[in-house]
Image (cartoon, rainbow, N blue to C red; front, side, top):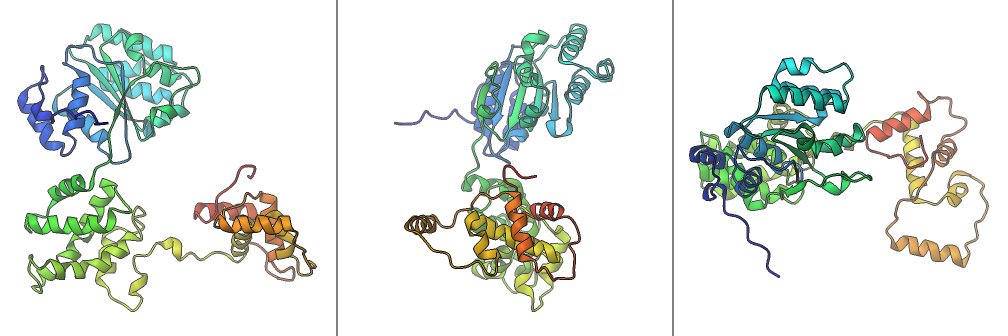
Length: 420
């Protein structure tokens, strides 16, 4: 079954009501996202027309959702309020930022100390009547998944806010999650869904190649990006992270050219120079445990401990004395059933006879590759007390529960249901 054809790029579509020069500038700033920008602009319609009440835009991280929306609204000079839900702990802060961006500080000052949804709708309608909009107003909510942690009926109100305030208003919800995780049990007005797919390898190469260094040719930087994607594309497809890695390691890539040991056309020699450094950087992708300046210094200093440079700090963690026994007990409790506690933690446990049933279950468990077993906090503490020598004069530096929270903070253990 053949898929439906994609719409033409933004500069080839007809969007009445918008100047061609502005559309051309928008298309230049949105490489590999012209199709999505054209679809969104078609849904928005002409500036004076009533638009959809709510559009839900979703896609993975760094897929261009916020960038496309902000470029369209700013370049086309449309009235809008862009709000990050991370900065809004309560609904009152959300209401204040919306009124401040659309109507100014006087409208935001009229909100009561603890405003409700009805207060926000009443104040919005009052200022809307005093300053009628000639164009559609837009409210852009980034990280919209955090709205689920606010008032229970807030999301249901936002998707039909156009009807409540009686204004030419569109709410744009941006999220990394699908709409199914938002839908309340009581039901609500379904927004129109717009998906932003991940960038392909060719699209990432095209976007990253635009950031070339002015001191070097475009072909050299394009070959560098090709090498970078060949190593990192299998483990990282985040555009922001790849852009950070490209800027971080480009100086090392050009080092033979700067020192006169190679030419820009000597791709093989440049590849051999940068390959070990990119492999080290791959072990700390997403972590950013050191700054860019510290990473450059680490690359410049060659010592005997060179193979360890660039490794994640999580592989070199020094734990307190008793925390080590807690970690051992958690490992044993995770990979072994509770009935084997006596066998592992008691010195004189006696001989254990295996029945046919136990042998069959152990064989089946071995075929599953040693899956984690559920264990409660009491089992882990019992294993911890059995592992620590009773005659040890040292005492734990803190409560075992506190030490286990530290292990969870280091991602060495995670809590199960039923624990603290």
